[in-house]
Image (cartoon, rainbow, N blue to C red; front, side, top):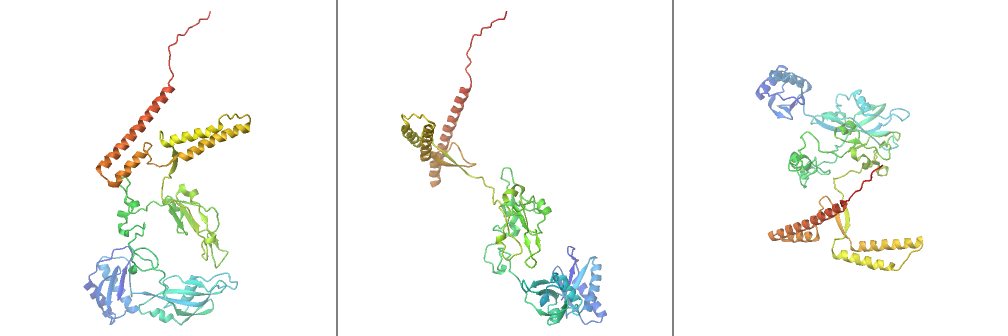
Length: 466
């Protein structure tokens, strides 16, 4: 097969399969090649040409010229690529020099490895698909193992030409050998957990954006942060499709930039114990601050970002701990009271009378005796209050008129949900409201009456000045 790929982002031209086959075969016949196109179809975002053999480099050049002319006739003037399907082969080089200078201070880089191949007779088969990865044998070793990924044909012709060959890296002849492909740890595309492929997942679908129990394409219709709430007061509009939901935290390596955080409404939170967040194991002198944390401006102080050096282990990066609010929650406050005209209030008064009787006939004459009497009175009131008080929780939904009868009526209604119990509950609440507000009105009227002075008509005599 020969693949035709077009520039990313450009529209793929509509080519007639018969016209393409006739034009390609005509060019091959004129170049005296026995290669022929048998059929074609749309593949990999372009076109795939099924040939009767494997095209050589010269035949690929002929095909490229013919296909460019056919695409120009179809109105396509952009760039295109014509070549054979490629796969990746994996190689490794043992005992490569980790340092290339005599002082053992300058390390070998990926660029040095690639330049060594390009300067060798093996350059025709060496087509790097990724930068070389250099792993030092040990902390005290001066040699390393180099892992290479190269573009190759499906038959592995490039890898076969390089295996067991030698390449000179800074004067050291290093043997090339095959390496096993490392697929790394798989990430499931269904539950988005590490450790198993999607085909073996037995969990429910999970949204990769919010972690909710829905698929990614259902996110804007199911996620509470994005779908909005038209019934809220005021109504909450849905998050625009091209915007991110509200963020409270962003952290990581230098990919988290300050200008990116600022565009999301976040600010940099400096650690409470400043210092380097990256210490290279291979080079202890390399100490950098590259791990950053960004939080909401109102949370910078409470975030308490801290460098956790004790948890670093064998990593080059120092972990950063951050305190972030998981949800906005109104704190609950506890209150204490004695219900008026209740049995608890009567017992409270009785205990005070009994406690105060201990001071009957006691006449303090010194400062110490006076302190003793004051402490005894305070202890009597405190002990009686703690014994008979009733605790309650103060929240945004607390109602001052609510009584124990209201609670009892509500529990009876919830037990059977009957109409009669509901009417009884509403009557109880109504009576409690009436009693509470009548008492408040009476208290206010009495207070205001006491504040209004009595005006009496008085006869005022005026004396004249002679």
